[in-house]
Image (cartoon, rainbow, N blue to C red; front, side):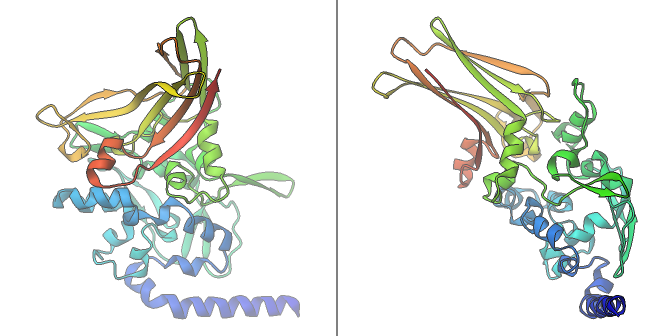
Length: 369
């Protein structure tokens, strides 16, 4: 009786989904993500609390999108609002367009299609869903295991971007792929999607959460439990010591599977702040060092808009497994030091120029006496 009741409830739920979703599903090929929430509430809520929900509503992206050339806007939306692009819904009338990166965009993706500047995804939109569950038990839709969803290549469609055959404005995937570091290489999902293990018939099976942890989540106040912050801090070491008249500060990319900071279209900066204080606690020395990608326009001037860039002046980011040491001479009055390592989503000068907040994450802090 209990089994029959359970089946009846699943049937009624499936019927409800069909009634509610079919008009939108038939029109777009993608289902609204709310249709997934009844059976996958945990994964749905994780996605709702992740940067994937931001898309075009990401305030930094929106500012750059508004300044981008018209011919480039659709290319930007392939990653920030892909459902809208695929359905030519540039007014964002459909529910899946409003969701920016809906569940179905990833869970109906079958492979990558190489392109000039970036790869796009091939889809089999419908009631068949793909993921990393080995033997999915589904009543409402068909579920299929997809190895593609478990490997870093899956992420490369949006995290590997070359502009005009000149500049790799996001080279994250290639940096990971070419990693030469004496530790076990992990897939992107193993760091950014909070793996969890379940015992199934005596075997331990690892699955992934839809958390998509990264600096945006912390900087935009979306990291309520602090787990994303722990991930960011765990991959970098900050050390300092006094040596005669100098203070030596070292930064090590000890566990991030790509350069630090991540490329993110050449905007992100890793900033080292050093303050020296005298006996009374007054600041008598202040110095910053900045690491990132510096882009130059056709006139040789620094630009924050990658579409204006003609060359890369420098890439001072920190590769995996490497250390940078900075030496400072603070003077005789500085006895105590406060040191911070900060990741900025956008350079401070660009924030000020564009009227944006200084979105930043304090990765590490040190006091040296």
